Image (cartoon, rainbow, N blue to C red; front, side, top):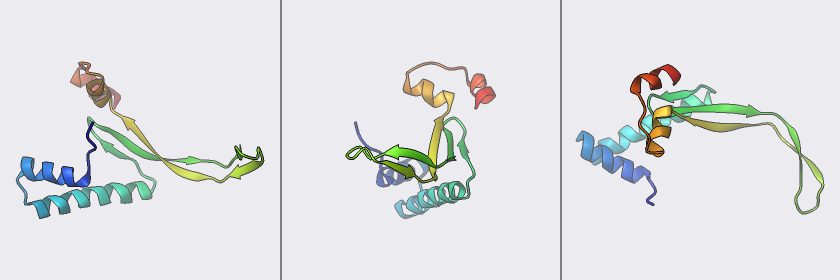
Length: 106
């Protein structure tokens, strides 16, 4: 299985959209920067037909050091959550989904 990289995304934009490689790279970086800044502000990013990225806050809790068994506090933190759309889930599972249904649930 091949990993998708920034370079492969740039190449895909270059081939499918027709921008130069340099413009394709700038385009991709602008999109990624917008997504990162939006998530950094605590807002969600919804890409229709793909999924929703959001930030969730986890409170402080107790944990244990696995080596010593000593109880240690786990500090509050933000975690990134991705919720795939029904359309993406269906495609990954090679299922057919009614596109009207996607609009209702996403």
